[in-house]
Length: 79
Image (cartoon, rainbow, N blue to C red; front, side, top):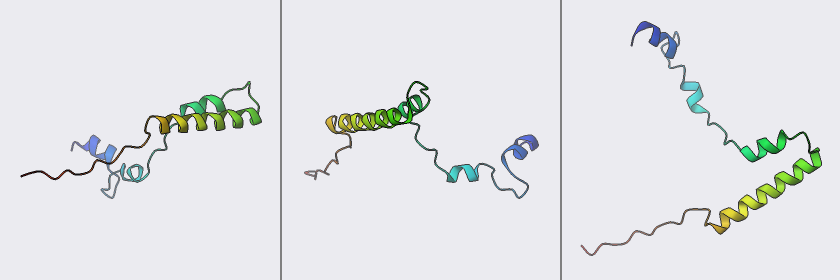
């Protein structure tokens, strides 16, 4: 590595700086929740109700479309 690049990516002990961030998983971003939470026209009860309804609709759609992937059985070959 070039000296500047090395300093940027490794600390003084020689450990990668990104090692800490690789251990943490980023939470899934829920855009609907963000839109509803930032809506100033809704009070807290209305926000709670809308979020609950949104979650219910999303679950129904997932179930209707086969939400989870079905397991494929291994077929034994004739050979």
